[in-house]
Image (cartoon, rainbow, N blue to C red; front, side):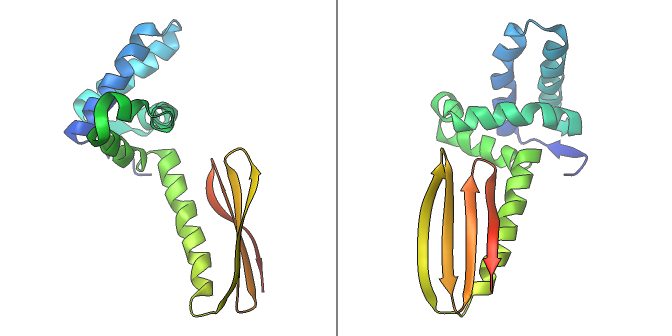
Length: 152
């Protein structure tokens, strides 16, 4: 992640609106200060690494629960997703997706022999692909997508 994340007006608006009730309700002075600092940074349109790390789990939860879409509508959700992809967790998810895509590229041009999906647990799945003598297993869960195994 770069040192700072510049916020568009709609991204800043979402952050400020989502943090307002948290700052107001925080009973721990340290937490209240941390959230207020993120809110102040959003008002200035730029998050440093500390602000991004503080905002990251809050924005992720608000997106997962549907809160952002319910309160701010589809446009607000899209703005929040654009911002999330630039926060530490979103950056990590993008990197794992790129790694999986890179591994899947090894299957290009091979005849697909089998594909299966297995449920491993709550929100956890395994996708197995077999093509041209190569077996690839991908795990999909709350931590993202990652290669579980490759057998040549």
